[in-house]
Image (tube, rainbow, N blue to C red; front, side, top):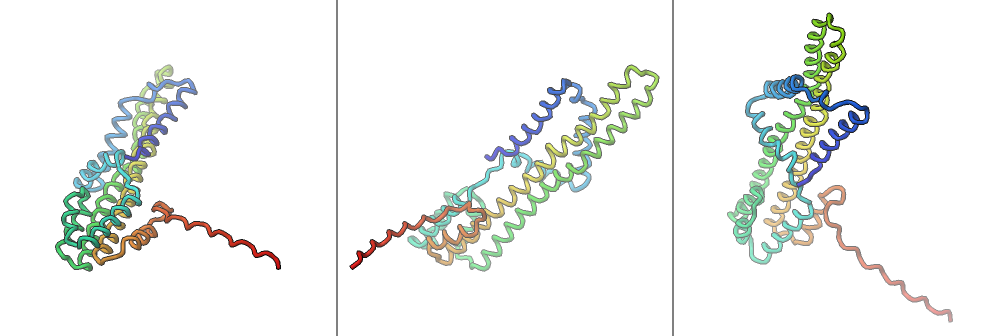
Length: 268
């Protein structure tokens, strides 16, 4: 589990709480049910209206992943593929069926089963590429849903403020109550901006980033298993996969020992 989203959201709201406390205000003046119901309820509603019901359900299913999404290190994937290559060279491709039984990843499991079944390499590549594209498309739908809500929320907050100010204008005959009523009116705008920038947009970007990392992982696995099927030498396969990982996230090859300088010849 990567806690980046939880840490970021908690720190963001903590900064707001700190500001309110430093200024001597009260949090109860910001946590008002009416504007919060409007902002959150209407934002979700127009988010549903902007797509399909299936898009909404996909986004709901993907929401826990934004907070509990597991990021698998590329080196772990590379080590796993190299281990499979060593077993394939020692025991043959039919041994991949037995290896598939002990693997939880559905993508890798299906790939190994296809190798053991003798699927042609070109056909297997097409199959795996299609599966990667389908997974990426589904992830983009969920990320777009939350990003779309992040675009709607500030405007809905302004709508809430306008509605509240209309109520304020109806009570101009009560000057003593105008100050608190005007302050309450702007709470809707505040929650519109907070929900957009502290929740919806970060969640959408988080899901998009997790999708990119998952596609990178699946691509590594695809190239690895295809190389295993082709009988690639394990050490060379590991070097090739490490070269595909940007930013030095793959394991670095061991440094060559420093050459010992030859002793200088004594002058005759």
